[in-house]
Image 1 (tube, one colour):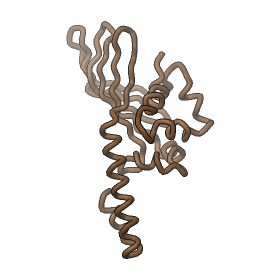
Image 2 (spheres, rainbow, N blue to C red; image 1 turned 90 degrees about the vertical axis):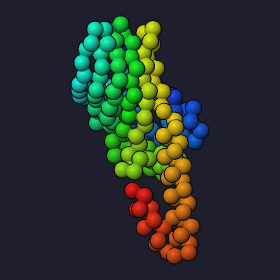
Image 3 (cartoon, rainbow, N blue to C red; image 1 turned 30 degrees about the horizontal axis):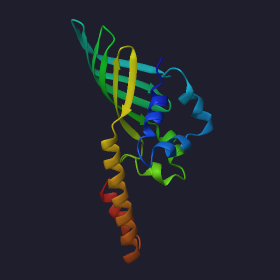
Image 4 (cartoon, rainbow, N blue to C red; image 1 turned 135 degrees about the horizontal axis):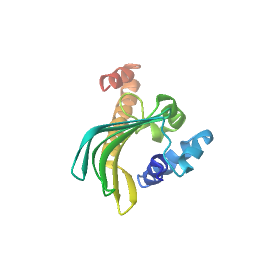
Length: 169
């Protein structure tokens, strides 16, 4: 089997500032989920069509109490796949990852969740799940600028920095 969460956390170690920090932020009660041999989910939905040996997936959604994953792309009856996906952690799980961890907070989406864009491929019976680092790096840069600008303004006019941050949401 394949463990989407386990591969995500393993691949995230390649992103400076996030990898070890993200893995270290996982509460002990969830670590078994990352070490499992398969991806656990409570619901699966798919919408698409089959044209010959190609399966076009307009929507492929997995849900679990800790995360949801939405994907689209192609798969073949020969077992190959090429999907673009987003894995979004639940608000509670995101809060536990971000609690007391400034680096994780830099990667949060505007709604406060940790959303990780993924590329999922399968060839030669091997599934590879790779985070798309460009949007994550861009989000971290935006959040850093927003935090620094807010802190600087608060020094000049107290409480205005928080109002500035709200303009970016």
